[in-house]
Length: 205
Length: 205
DNA sequence: ATCAGGTTCGAACGAGCGTCCGAACGGCAA
DNA sequence: TTGCCGTTCGGACGCTCGTTCGAACCTGAT
Image (cartoon, rainbow over all chains, first blue to last red):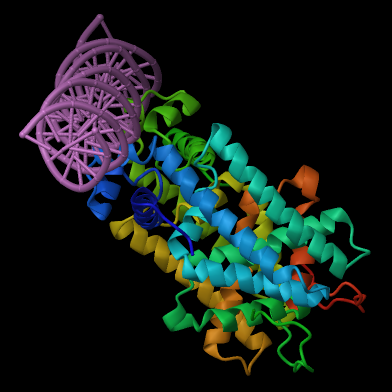
């Protein structure tokens, strides 16, 4: 069990509410007063938990990345087949995205909002994640040049991250279906006539 | 030839500089004073050409959409094969994107920044563009359900629009190569072992 | 030279922002 | 009860923002 002090619990609550506010209004248009209203904590009371508005954004993005990378490791560690690994990665990314829409929208959309040491740290995590995907695609296509891998890697990230602009589970179907379809799209293409003769990958954990 | 008055020319110049500023700092963090500095026009002088900061963003996005939709029509009008049509659409989108990075980054990234009538008009153009893509994919896969088409449509937009976060021609190759690779990725998938037996589509105009 | 009208600008206004400070609160050990 | 310390908050400060206003400028026609 995670032991969490009263302090940690309230900080977590603040971060969640702040993510929702940032997601709705955008980081720069959102105000500390908005977050104060959303949490019920007074304006100056927030500064007991957080040094600045920047740190608030940093903590949201940091925890987001930590969780998703940790979850990814635990999914991939005992799978070797490259297609299965890609399927699991896409599933992991999209499931986490859909379960934490606000946080992931903030992570995707406010990437440039941070600066200084905060930005450096988040950028490093992003580079690590990108390298993981690139390596995975490299295992899938050993003859591909690195520039091809780069283009494919970010095409995949584009497909996945863009969902914050359009995806709503009630209208667009459950996440696992989305993950399956996106994996199929990325691996086999938008091939309508071709029925799948048994897929070698799964997005489910 | 386009006849352009002194007034129109200066407005165009302002819009271009404003797009660059918005692209670099983000709409809400950018200030009218930044745009004043970038154009050399005084702070209050800008208001002779533009009613408000909102209108500035609106004019940038509007002209962007108009150009891209007009250019698309002229490319697709005499082509019927669905795969060729998709190739041309992707090529048109990416070429325009790369040639007008600032404007297209603003269009992609600041979609929620507008409100009221401005937002409504831009949203309508966006819906029209999405419907075009969705119809095109429907022609490519007549048996697909509308929810599948929607997922595929926005997956494609995600791939294309995300490039503002990573693509640089000097490092990642010319746009036409990017367009070819993305079209192939979308239609056939990341199929490394399979050599292409003569593609039926082209991204070139 | 004079005038009119399109264009430009310096200076200011009111509002809203992130942040800080000092006092007050509350529960627990002595 | 007293005193301490982690926690909370009202109120304010200094700054920057978008926008406005009236005067000055420039140019071409009379």
